[in-house]
Image 1 (cartoon, rainbow, N blue to C red):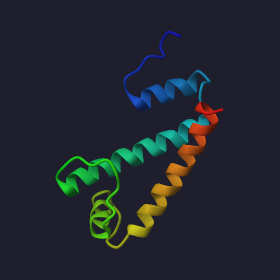
Image 2: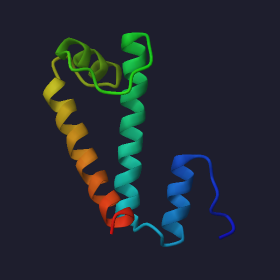
Image 3: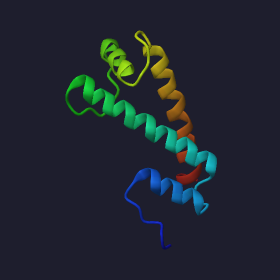
Length: 100
């Protein structure tokens, strides 16, 4: 289909939703998860000083990552809940769209 090839994840997701390949709600869930994961990954790199592929398991490091993205000190439980809620919604979207 012309116009469907894009290298940017957010653009490709938007175009897929515009063409009805992904529902608007599912596209919104996937976009929110992508934005959060990108923010957390970038914050973790800034905090740790090296590339990472997961949230820190150490609570001190997780608190540091949370502060880099704008959470107040002592927000490890809140950032984990935000992450889990967002990724649960994205997982549901993936299951509906790609694993049916």
